[in-house]
Image 1 (cartoon, helix red, strand yellow):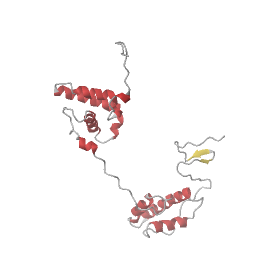
Image 2: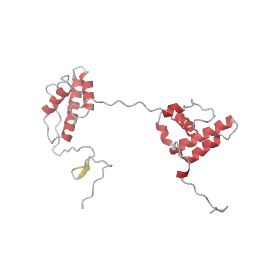
Image 3: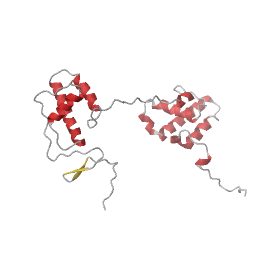
Image 4: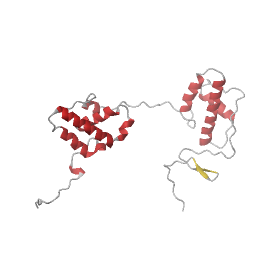
Amino acid sequence: MEASENTIKLYYNTEVEKLGMPEYGRNVLKMVEQLRDIPDKEKRTQQATAVVKVMESLNPQVHQQENWRQKLWDHLFMIAGYDLDVDSPFPKPLPETAASKPDPIPLNTVPIKARHYGRNIENIMNLIAEQEDGEVKTAMIRSLAIYMRQQYLIWNKDTVADETIFQDIHRLSGGRITVPEGVQLSRISSDAQFSRPGMLGFQNGKKYGYNKNFKGKKRK
């Protein structure tokens, strides 16, 4: 059955070409396509600059990137399929650059010596071990021991002797750090409680250690 002249034809996204950069929408694609119809290159460049400003308003998070103005112009050429004759204030991107994959991020495959302390503890120990002996280094060791005790209590049990923490510092540092005699850690309050990340706890009737993304089941 043929449609009458007054029939309105509906278009669906499944019937049109897939957007290469959907964050800018199909209207920007139409603007970019209309740029090619402008015969004068100077006017075409002016309109391209206006389109880039529209793209900036539609994608404000691009400001968080370095060289964001160049990123917008790169996106303009990508939307145009790299076939747009305008005077860009930046070097035009090449299709080969967009198709290339980023270099893989090397993973640290060295096993963690003590998981409940975390890998960063080893980096901190390397820093402290390079310090000259003195009051500053002693203060750093004491702060490290307090932090390690807190991590220990989160993942293990309710109490731990200071000497255990001191021995762990000496062991994990490969003998490079020895806690000086006379160092004492601050006392832990009797009502102090430690919770693992993402877990809920209560202290004095109030929640602590609360993760807003945690969704617990309601009790019936």
